[in-house]
Amino acid sequence: MLDAYIPIFLFILVALGFAIFTLIVAGLVHPSRYSKVKLEPYECGIEPDTDARDRYSVRYYLVAMLFVIFDVETVFMFPWAVIMDELALFGLIEMLVFLFILVVGYVYAWRKGALEWT
Image (cartoon, rainbow, N blue to C red; front, top):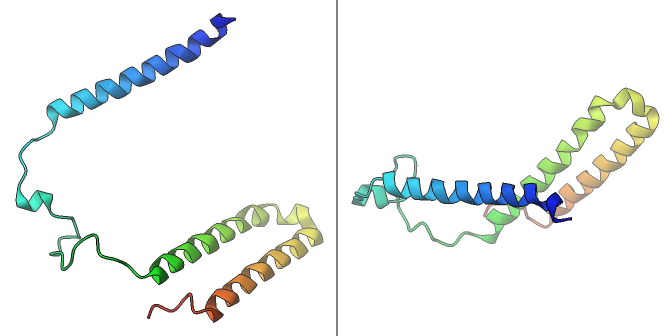
């Protein structure tokens, strides 16, 4: 019975060994000289004006979440477009209902002021 688990244990052992080996080699070859410039946060070559840990408005995160939600929703349309001929009228009605729900959510977010930056 335990013979069936030997490949799994071997795989775990190899994975752990590789991880430990990689960390050791990286620790041995990394440069250990630090300077003020290397310790600054990278901002595309522009001098940082404020601290990197400043607070952001909740609206920033709300707009980011809305973008992700609507982006994921539009990704669902791609498989539908690929097999649109097979779905015929049922697929068209289903996608229209899906788009209607998407538009209702967009209008709701717009009315609540979630898309305004100020």
